[in-house]
Length: 166
Ligand code: C5P
Ligand code: MG
View: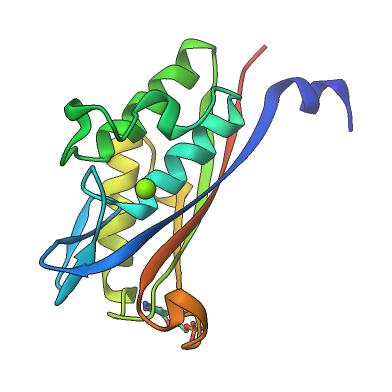
């Protein structure tokens, strides 16, 4: 790889899991999804935003979400996870990086999420100051296998590319 590319581009990955519980909202990428259950967590438990936040922090080598927003800190109780995303983007921007693109996958057995793809992409893009075509969100079941497949949890994976102009 040329020095030009290596000096400018950074890639980061993120992963998160939250337990499924009754009586909590299901929020993915800042969008409330109609559902008879939600996700447990100290913040709003937005598993997708958490994975993308970690991918962003990872690409900039700025630690992880728990380092910046510890779940023992009462300030983050019930927090809107889009704030974590914005903060991670701002930290990356401080060292000169802007986002090229985000790709992500939510793994959840049900409900079906595909009708919410546009809303989630638009909300994430607005939050990160991107165009919607820079943000991809995919959905998968776990084929009824394992904790996700058996309906105990939801997972999300994300990858983010950053660039820094010379
Ligand atoms: O997991 P599987 O490959 O069967 O998913 C097929 C399609 O169903 C996915 O490509 C996605 O578009 C959709 N899906 C969804 N909501 C989920 C899981 C999958 O809309 N919770
Ligand atoms: Mg989380």
